[in-house]
Image (cartoon, rainbow, N blue to C red; front, top):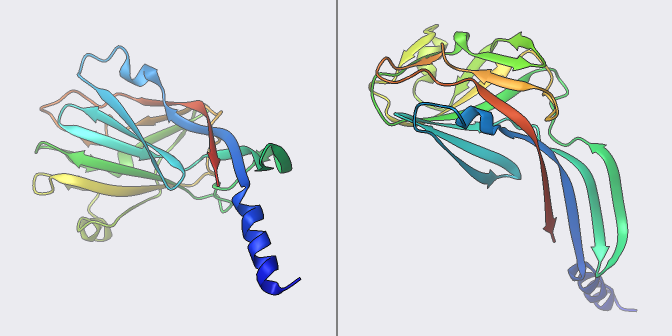
Length: 208
């Protein structure tokens, strides 16, 4: 059999294959939204195989990527015949070095906000963790590098991206995870940001 024929046969075989995967990830709990006196809403989108949630509050929008999606099942199918599958807790995203990075994007729609990352509190199964570092691709990184912990956003309206580092391993989606920004991200013209609760969410997808 010629190499060309082998190549064509391989392409036809691969084109007939599809794959299915499923797992769990953290998403914002409805408890964060329900019962709030302030007007709020939640938008969900996908980015790089991760769920991204945007919490819209008066004057500000918060976008979170916990980056803790876990794949628990992965299989490859030839038409209707499974030819490969993996079950069990398969982990593609957890940080093995014990330094967890949480990505948070903030869209400032109104002036008057200040951010002190030292006041951020991450709760995992009842234990409290504070950030050990803050990184940003924005011009405010100069303020951070110069030791300025409280940053004013009167002159920085629009979307800003932050990476908060914690001295823990990436929490699993089935753990009790809460994020408290109420004393870290403040605007005296608006109510305090509610404690953001996350819950385990099952996901699945077919792909080729």
